[in-house]
Amino acid sequence: MNTEQIAKRLVELCREGKYEQAQDELYAQDAVSVEMEGSPGGGAGNVKGLDAIREKGRKWQESIETIHGGSVGDPVVAGDWFSVAMGIDATYKGIGRMDMKEICVYQVRDGKIAHEQFFYNVG
Image 1: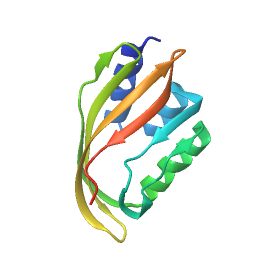
Image 2: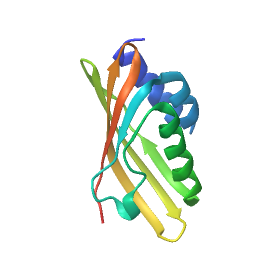
Image 3: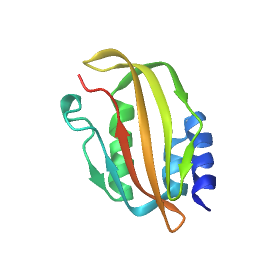
């Protein structure tokens, strides 16, 4: 798949809430995931490797009590890169309700997502 096809497929799966399927289908084994510096509670941290990304996703899902809404925008593609605006309105265990908006940036290498980085307000 090329970058545009991967971007569209990621958006499709995220809109369906199929994050693990997206990782299994679209991510490189050595992919890197980067969070915002200073994210609450250390955030999910920066990790390398598909297994670590899956674990990061599981921990994030376990931290949620209730999802009140969410959004996944259309991708913007430039060469081997694409970005997607995403949002989630959720109540988190021990934190409370937050309506979070972020820009997610992805790099594609050899037909797989090799790098993801998230940009959002901290604090």
